[in-house]
Amino acid sequence: MRLSSSDHLSLGDKLRHLNWAIVALITLIGLIGVALLYSAGGKNWQPWAFAQLTRFGMGLVIMLFLALVDIRFWLRAAYPLYWIMLFLLVVVEIMGHVGMGAQRWINLGFFVIQPSELMKIALTLALAKYFHGMSLEDIGHPIKLVMPVMMVLMPVGLVLLQPNLGTATLLMLASAGVFFTGGVRWWKFLIVFALVAAILPIGWHHLHDYQRARLMTFMNPGADPLGRGYNILQSKIALGSGGFFGKGFGQGTQSQLQFLPEKHTDFIFVVLAEEFGLFGALFLLALYGLLIAYGYLVALNCRNQFGRLTAFGLTTSFFLYVFVNIGMVTGTLPVVGIPLPLVSYGGTAMMTLLIGCGVLLGIALHRDMRLSRTGSYD
Image 1 (tube, rainbow, N blue to C red):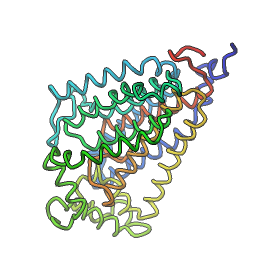
Image 2 (cartoon, one colour):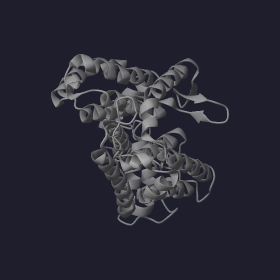
Image 3 (cartoon, rainbow, N blue to C red):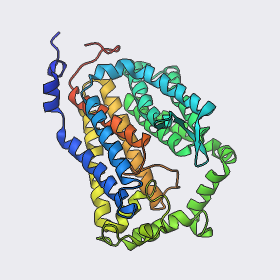
């Protein structure tokens, strides 16, 4: 059987066919993040901007390397990667590093990793492989969905124990996107939604005190303006004070005068909006929109099911990062500690996003490849 042209791509061919416009787009978003961290640090490379630039540079190299990896490697490695990440989540529970009241990290001495972030990619790959090996008739049988549901619930349960409700929610929502794209009928989602709604009152009593406080603050941030509601109230003040064109680079009063907490992580978008106004905020959102649209186009144009589902899952996860973070800082969603992708200060989250972008670029290169269920040529 004749193989598609993408099966014969040499390294040089892959480099020529790589979507360098998207690489440039990702680089631009990352550099915007570095600039904002430079401003948030008082126009100083320390303590955040230089470290972010270094990590982003390393992550960009890793992204380009992964973009050249054959898609069949990801199909074969999907399950092993999933089990490795699941094991690391167990390790977190046993001997994880505690920070900011949560046990989410593994301290390796020379760097710290957050397995729950890496699980977003591993889970997407594993689910994509599972549904790639199934026919539509198989997907129609509820018993066939037990395995992928368990694949989702195991890491979600471990992440909830950390506790990390935000990441657990993102894992479930991104996985739901893979289920839907894989062919699971919509009425089955309605059943799950009804079950979740039914157990919400029970779940409320099992939330940690700070999680309940966050939800109550979301409903009425003015009830405790100097306590739990302080972050979101200061965020809204900064957003409004930026106007259309902003106060200028490094001139944001809320961020520069230390009124805005967590300005380098969860609330970095507010720094942008205060200093560059609505124009700057919409510009960054437009860049995100282009990247998200590209990801979904890759999914739609991919001829193999594994690549299609992986691209859709990774893009949906990226979209959720943006959607939840913007919702948090504008007060339309509760604050759950989700970073702004490629812009917020951080290590594992940024690296995870760049790895996902690398896999997505690689799927685009191999979009015409037909795959067997095992990862060999069809």
